[in-house]
Length: 80
Image (cartoon, rainbow, N blue to C red; front, side, top):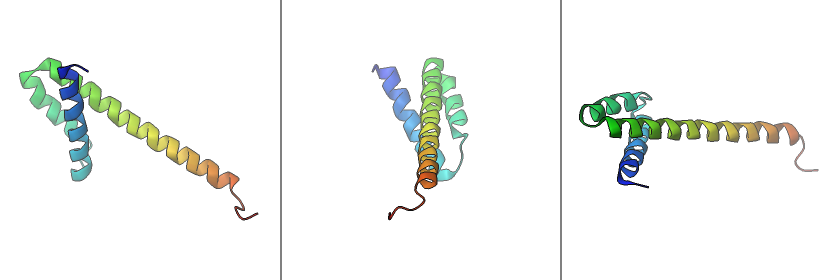
């Protein structure tokens, strides 16, 4: 991973953590604006990282819920 991607990935992870803590799912837009004022290249890499990390989190949550529902529907009597 090159320096740009590493910086973007670390910033994205930090931003997502702050978003969760403060309850603002759109904070990354503001951070991107700050980045874009200095570096469009870093802004684009950051946005890509945030979006892919957020999408992966949503996909994982979907898989967990799908598996939970499946197990609940097939586990009608777990003690037999």
